Length: 212
Image 1 (cartoon, rainbow, N blue to C red):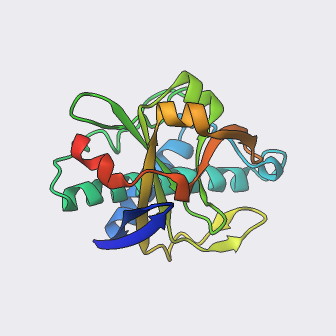
Image 2 (cartoon, rainbow, N blue to C red):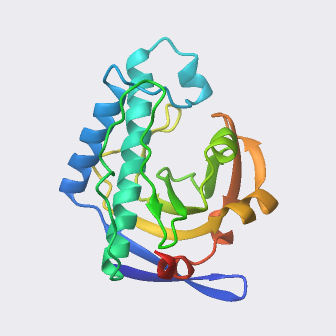
């Protein structure tokens, strides 16, 4: 694991870069396909141009991509915590819940039972921690961690990236629910209204790790 120091305002913040291996990709893709391509598919928010398209295969690919990237982000955070000497319970990370209204409900938890959700960016333009406003209000988490994968765009219009050439994930920082509620802006970036913070405004992950 590589440590990357960033200056954020008056502070030096440690970010952590972990390597993505082929086994991680295979497990994440199998999980994503199991959710999206089954009868238990949960319809996630889609970009406007994809949602209005009649190309069902592209809609599915976008949903598989989002689930795949999110799972890689969770696995990367778990790897970071392991490298930092933390014992993390990942038993539920690959559990698929039955029913079309259910989603992947895996969360990391702190030692005192608070929830930690991982939000994964993966396109070059992704520079914000974003939480869909309905999820933030109806399924709130105590902490939100930002992870960024080094994927590259294949087709920016369709928002498809190169799944195969992802090699690293960087754990950029986190924010707690209270801070996001008080300070995060709200905007619709084309996939529904979301609360968001710039990555460079996040707290260093070193402040959260001792709680896990």
